Each structure stands twice: as structure tokens, then as C-alpha cells.
Image 1 (cartoon, rainbow over the protein chains, first blue to last red):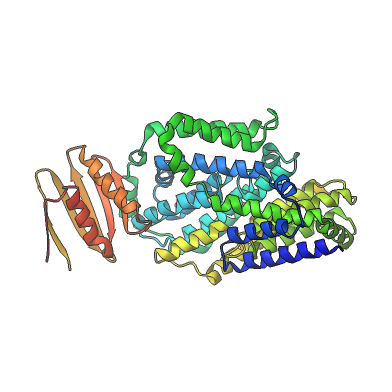
Image 2 (image 1 turned 180 degrees about the horizontal axis):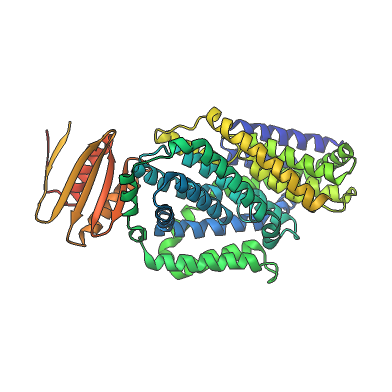
Length: 426
Length: 92
């Protein structure tokens, strides 16, 4: 192994360690690690720029702009109250409804954005019914991670996969992951509803009060809502058709975002751009450069070679190994750097004799996305909801979450193992 | 210290109930334009990033149910005064 490869591994491991400890913001660490790769001569600036996946960045930015403007309309509160009324104000059924709405939202929007929109509504509904909000919040965390797994745009690991592998189109994700993830979702929500059933009771008077709410009044700007819905629906249609039209997913998202800005006018421009999570965008940039150091020095190829050697190049063993390692790793560390490292490794496995990479990609996606449900620090949505809940006097402790979510995550991965085996490996 | 308030009973109705850690208000009025006043109060509390300070619920016929956490009671009454929904407030 060359000296440059050893330096690259050193920079990578130190950066990773700092990301895991969360002592310094992950964006600062990832960017510092990426810059070190260039400064130490591991990779040239030109090559570093070449490794930055602008499709991932464009897709994230476009969707963030659309969500920033749409969230101004009161749409999410309208949907939540409408759903709560549809189930006659019954807390148990509201838990199922809010979980499903969160999963559907996360399938098309960023998970963190979805929970940020759902949590205030959840506090509002549970307060009116005088029920404990924690079962609802835990359900929403789990639903957001499961729902995000179902589409190309639902979770950053999927965005990265879809961007790195041409064959993994929006429709490919729908065809391969949507049904299984929604099956897992309903198993998870069903178990949660059973666990919390005794806490999900309220009086008939409070139910009647909720039934009397006028959800239409929650829409604050009807004209903006229409424009947002037009842009959002066209964008989603664009994702369905992007392979057919030979355009990348980032082009679809950015076209949707700027169509919306064109319709709304520049008064929303500054606000929409201020709500783009630039820290996340730069976190990705840092990671892409960091991993490029490992790729260019041949470290990733060596790791792939070792993994193939470990599994004897057997497709079944390799798929199951990737699924479980990704899930356990993602329960404790950020799944974005993990997936950024795994993508080139799996690509290299293709060159080392594994002909059918499809089951490996789906194993990585399912493992990395669903693994985030294992612990309170497994995904950004978990941390955000726990932080908001603690601030509002309803703490979700690490242990309390682990006790419920970790077995659910293991159950989900067992279901995925059976699914991967039956669908791709026999 | 608590706040006492007075309002024009010809124009609106305010029903206040203590409820554990919260106070619950029911506001009703005939003038549709007053809805904007309530929205302004809602926007004020939305800006502080606290999710459970005040919950607003909109019912038909200009009826607003507002659940106010005890520690935000005075601030809420001050906002009612600021929007001229109540006409007089004083410390008691």
C-alpha cells in the first residue's frame, strides 16, 4: 500500500471519528477532511471537483426550496387535522394516520423537513385530546425513516445511490422498494399501536371538540397553495418520467423549484434560499472529496477485494452481509458517510467478478435507511424530534427509544433479508 | 403576578378556564375582520420556536379555542391587548 493511501486512510479515519463523536459540527469536520485530502496532495483540486456529485446536491437544493415555500401555506396542518377528523378523533387511529402521513411525506420530501412539519401539528392534536405525545413522536420518527426508504428522493442514501448508478432510476426504486417498505411500515406502526394502546384514550367530549375544527381555515394563502401544489405535482411527475425523458433527477427538482419561484415572484426568493440547509449541502461536498481520496489511492478497491474474498464472491452472502452491516452501522453512525464509502466499494465488486450488483444496491439502501431507526442517534430525523420533544418537556431518552425501536429495526431487517433472498437471490 | 382584563362584551365573548398546567380560552366574535387579529397573535407566538406555549384551534363561526401554557398566560393577555381584543389590563 502506498504512502499516499496510508495518509488518505489516516485523514478518513480521523474525520470519521470526529463525525461520530459529534463534538464539532459534522459539516466543519467533513469539509476539513476533504480540504486536507487536497492540501496533502492525495487528490488534485480538479479531480476533487470531478468527484463531487452535483446531481445529489441539485436534487437536495431543489426539493428544499419547494418544501420551504409549500410549508408556508398551512397544507400540512390541514392534512393532519383532516386525517384526525376522518378517524373521528380516535387517538389510536390518529397515531396510525399521522404515521402514514409522515411516511408518505418522507417518501417525497426530506425526512427532517417532514418531521419538522409534523411535530408541531402532533403537539397541537395531542394537546387538544389530552393524550401523551411521545407515542406519536416515536411513531413519526420510525415512519419517516421507513417512508424515506421507499423512493429515490426520500432519503439521502437513496439520492446518492440513484445518482451514482444509472440503472437505479426513480421508477426502479418504486418497483423494488416501495411495496416492501410500506409493508414494513404497517408492521411497525401496528406494533407501536399495540404497545401504546393503553395511553391512546380520550374522552368523547374532547373527540367532539376535535371533530368541530375547521381545517380549511388552516390554509393561510390559497393562491400560494395552488402554485405550490402545481410545482410539487409537476416535480413528482418529472421524477416518474425522468428516465424516459433522459433528464437527471436534479434537473427535475431544480426545474420544479424555479418554476415555483417564477410563479410566486421574487418575494419568496430570499426566504426560500435561507431555508436551504447549506450545512447539509457542504457536508455532502466534504464527504464526496473525502471518499475520493480513498478511491484515487486504491483503498476502496482493496476493501472491495477483501470483502469479495471474505464472502468468496458469493452473491447471497455478500448481499446479506451488506444489508446487516449497513443496518447495524447506520443505527450508530451517520448513514451518509457510510453510503458514500460503500458506493465505490460495491462498484469495484462488480469489477472483481460479481456480475449482478442489483441485490447489493437494494441491500445497501434498505440497510442504511432502515438501520437509522435502531437508535436515537441513527438518523437526523430521530435527533431533531428528540431535541424538540425534550425542549417541550416530553423527553425521549436514548434507552426508552432503543428499547422500542431497536427490536423493530431488527424485525425490519429480517423482513428485508427474506425479501432480498426471495426476490433477487433464488 | 396575574393580570386582569376587560373587553367589550358587545363585540366579543371570552371564556377562560384553568385546566391543570394550561388555561383554555374560547374567543367568539361577529366581526370577521377580527380573525386577522387572532392570526397576528398566532404569528407572534409562532416566531418564538416554542411549540407548546400556545395552541390555536379554529372552529366554525369565528370561534377560536386557544390553549395557553401557564407560563405564557401574561404574554398572551398582553398580545390580546396589543391587538385591541381586550381594552384594559392591570396587574392584580
